[in-house]
Length: 261
Image 1 (cartoon, rainbow, N blue to C red):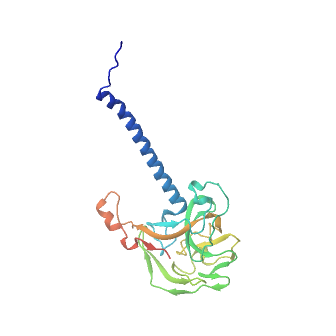
Image 2: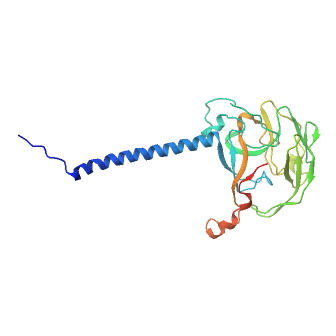
Image 3: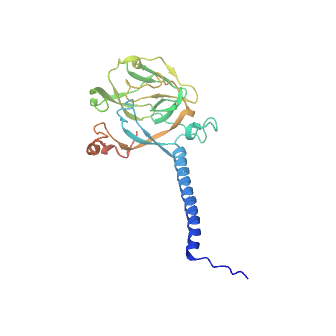
């Protein structure tokens, strides 16, 4: 008769350890997958961060601003999804944008590129710039003089602008800057009639913005990504990556968590 030997504690432990490691690996994998899923859902349907790379929206937005864009503001289109997956056409749960909204949208000629501008013209509007002044539906948009504006960050030499407070037909007020009323072709344009389901966009830095006056054209509502809500971080060019002691001084603390109007 053959007697079975009982397993020693060391043998039991050697078999238990791989099982525990496998279980731990599965739990970690599930946690990572869940975190990625939550991040994708938030980025696709709630909020998405953006960085301002150019000066076309001065003085409202500065180069080096980081902001959150509300993806739910205008409903959802294919461009709400990662990589612009063409799972559906048009927009669902659509809410009409308001004149004066600062909005992120996909460049119509290259949907892989994000632009941010102010919505000036709604469907059916007539928009024109004459001698530097904005006209909407044949009515001049009033503006009031403000103090001079200087851009001395992210430029080789300081740039000097006239600053104005512009009041759109719906009463929305915002700041704009201009070098002059006779700058390039953007200060004297043809009359644009905004098509149905499209918008006319302009930068607040009127003489330094490629927008619906030039290059961009009308922006289809499908290309809207969302409304810019607030700045959560901002820095100037006064710091250096290789000089950590300069980082603190480059941060624009006063711009943290400021709303975008």
